[in-house]
Image (cartoon, rainbow, N blue to C red):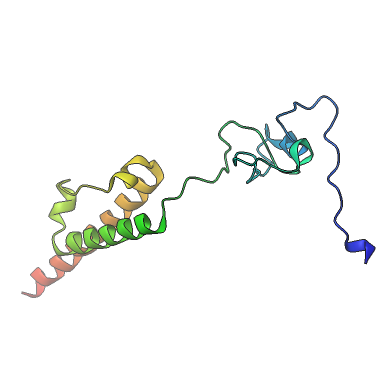
Length: 136
């Protein structure tokens, strides 16, 4: 098996900035992939020869900080409770009296996703209420 032996990464191109890696070449065109270890305390063991991007600015595909499992579970449970509450009384959602978890409020994408889901739950609840009124 010499054909499957690990190959050493290629050298960084001449003139490449020291803090960047050869994988950073595609960064301006957003065609690179971020290195998971470049920002870690130990750093990337491949250094400038790494095939992944080491550009320190906020990377478009950079991994977001993820809350611990316990916090994610608490948020999920609170959102389930909010969904149940809105399904029972959709006026609470349309009146804006529901307070979203702080972690959701801080993240614009999470906030938009949660508000869209709660809006759908409220719309469904109004449809059910309208159907019950027509029958009753």
